[in-house]
Length: 289
Ligand SMILES: Nc1ncnc2c1ncn2[C@@H]1O[C@H](COP(=O)(O)OP(=O)(O)O)[C@@H](O)[C@H]1O
Ligand SMILES: [Mg+2]
Image (cartoon, rainbow, N blue to C red; front, side, top):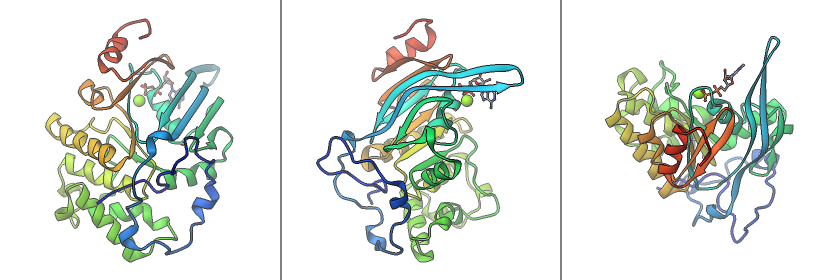
């Protein structure tokens, strides 16, 4: 099964047209046959810039104190990239992930996500964008304890008027098969191992066919053997299905799976490299790579 993201390839275009979010949200109901739900033909993702940050700053105000969590971040991420984000504690990784995931807006600067200016978007607009285009994977899985694995994966689709109940179930089953959990679909999260719970959470994150998966310390709560299984799944989703992945990790063994590593320090990018060794060196140096 192929799992191309919802907005699919943009044929023959190096600079994609601005996407119109409201038109995506208003797709005709029931227009897609279940067998077509996950297949959109050959991928041209690499030519598309999904994310563009220009001079993004984020300042938190705590009483009289100003904390400059991000200080002028400029970077671009193409469709189909696999990026890890590393840096010391307090360097701004979570703040940047929240920004990339449209959970927060920059204090200043520009953030274009798939052609939409997030810096000017309302909370509702950002929520709509998240529901349609962004999948989140968390360190502690965030599965609902009292529902089955299948129901957990169906959950993001409950809010979609364009997907009927039978399609919802079919998609969730396909995704559980994809992550190797089909035989566990009627289990509750407490009946799954940590690695299985994270795989279920990844299936749930994929349910709305996001353009991008954002993972904040996805292997933080699982052992190193299971962590390799989860990383194999990320690699498969990226290489075979063209899903864009950005993950925050403190674990260099995890970070080295990505094709590109961005190192943050004091709210600034100090290294952005496809060579993991130079990124790892930059993590321990005071200068830039
Ligand atoms: N909600 C907040 N309010 C105030 N300061 C914050 C908030 N979130 C993060 N910070 C501060 O911003 C800086 C970056 O934090 P964070 O993005 O969580 O870093 P990291 O994830 O790399 O550990 C830190 O100095 C932190 O104390
Ligand atoms: Mg953090």
